[in-house]
Image 1 (cartoon, helix red, strand yellow):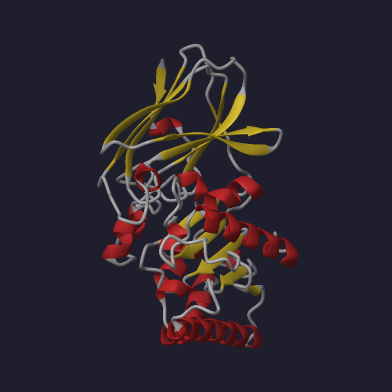
Image 2 (image 1 turned 135 degrees about the horizontal axis):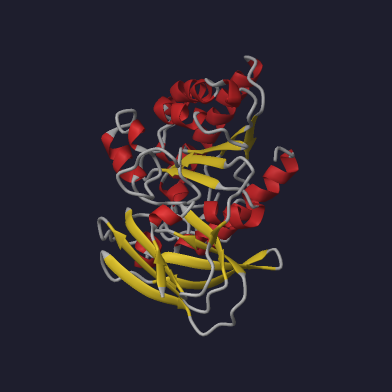
Length: 336
């Protein structure tokens, strides 16, 4: 068996992938370390949304991977936090193959064995909430390996713990990874747990990415005052480069899981934030900004209140519904 290391891969989901990185799959290159807050930088080292699309005719596939922190949380599975997911593409559709289940910082899993030798397209999704410090894909000695490069400009998502993938049971079920498989666009995941604060430095980083679409889903981490003060500056920071002047920017409203929830103050707060977001975006449009859109929360994860792990963070059902809601509305807006 021969093993391919990070230098062999053309990973998707990295900002400026050719620039220097301390860890091969950290989302932001080192050049931005002094641009963002320390807490946000630490989160940016997590490999959320990063994947390795490739093709091979191997009969057996083994993955070895190492994580930095051996992170654990009480509301998310170890597989989602620091595992890896393999998918295969057949007849233009993606199918789940298996999960590399973590057992600490150093991990190894056989994900395929004794299959027919045939050229197949795969995608390996990396850990959502830990830093992948090393990755090796092992294939048969006589097999092929080819990176698959997405030619379309990426979709860039900026947001919160939910954007980062909390709390999918495994990496492939985070919504940006679902959207990658459904739409075929590379997705750059700038989800930072607890730190989706509509910050200008992140807007500046986004402006460095020549994207098909920018998606802002920060509502869970901000209040009305932050929305009022930061929405317009964020838009202007994204628009700072010639390449981004007309790129669509989509704001996602915060989801209201249950309009009849017993906690009326919480519901009122979310309604107020969504109203303020709509007001700020509309003012930017009246001020001359073009290609700004809002996707309403209605029906995003349905009304049965079964789509979260804790009333906030999505479970697998929630991510599937949210991705479907996003795709439906993006197609309705005809902006891709």
